[in-house]
Length: 182
Image (cartoon, rainbow, N blue to C red; front, side, top):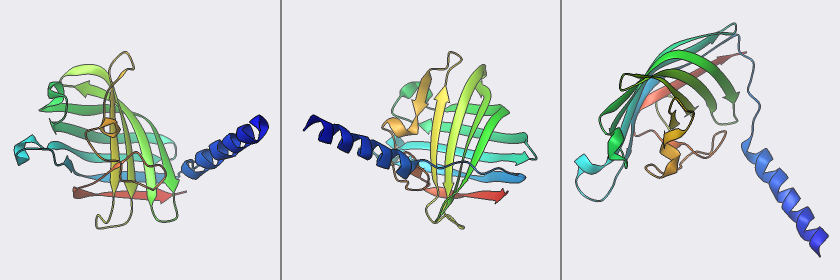
């Protein structure tokens, strides 16, 4: 009986891992650009709703990364982040994915959070076509000690993605365009 349970758990683990993982595609020229808002209605007035906006672009051209990206934390569940800004100074890495119904990408950038350097942004996005049909994002911010200090996946925003992962929230305003040229 124990072997059957272990085998079943092993198969479940393999199935779960295979369902949500994808290999990044090599890029001769790949990019993401756009911007928008993610908004989560909360109890109370509109001014109390969780709201984060972002905008910019990231490009990988023959292995060289460049970009300019900004995140504005207008109102979050953690009052310490309200009216805060992250400005990317250096794009560290980027991965692009081709899905059946969407393109996705992740990039990591270092920059300044409210003027303090050495913060890291991990930005994940899914592009389901244009104009914004069901584009998704996940915004994760790490402090200079590599500790996650904010993540849209941790409660302020609902998980609404099925494109190369499930932990992103739907874009409420704006558009994301991901171009992939292998």
